Length: 258
Image (tube, rainbow, N blue to C red):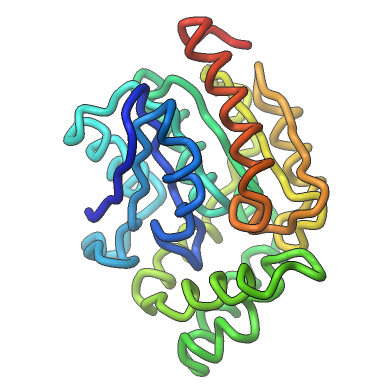
């Protein structure tokens, strides 16, 4: 499993979305490393990380995160997941709450398996990637991840990251998303939780983030007005400030709900 690290302090582990890689967190690696040991992974099947064997389920990805925390001596950690990464982070919080200081889910969801439309969308994206290739797939889909009028360099970064996805890794991630619905389990989460969403998110949407915040105990919701689905890349200063405030409260309270 390949990771990028920066800084020192309480560990903050970052899990990217289905079309991303560790590089999606460049602004967090630099902006949050004064207070935290920031660790961003290339998920299995992404970037420089090998695929998980066979047809992994969501528990396999969660177990990979847990093993990574232990291998890096980074537990308990603040765990931040964006989109698909937020779904993995949610499963870690359910599966091994002892390894977490807190949970942050950004522009994420309860899982695409919650609706037939969500399941079908995951299957169609895999087919589109297979038939069009990563470059054309990213050029068509990438701009939807940002808010209308987003700065072109940010749009270009999102597209460039997505153009490097590999079909096996993306297919596994999409299959896992299509099989997941955490709706009935969210009330079991014990970690202090922050839910962040770009107010112009066209992918998972504000309503879905509100549902997460309503169903996870001891959680709060922060909306970033000028951001879309890629809020951490579009508005990094505001995103980092919200995360920084939340993590400082958790660390000062010894991990108790804020």
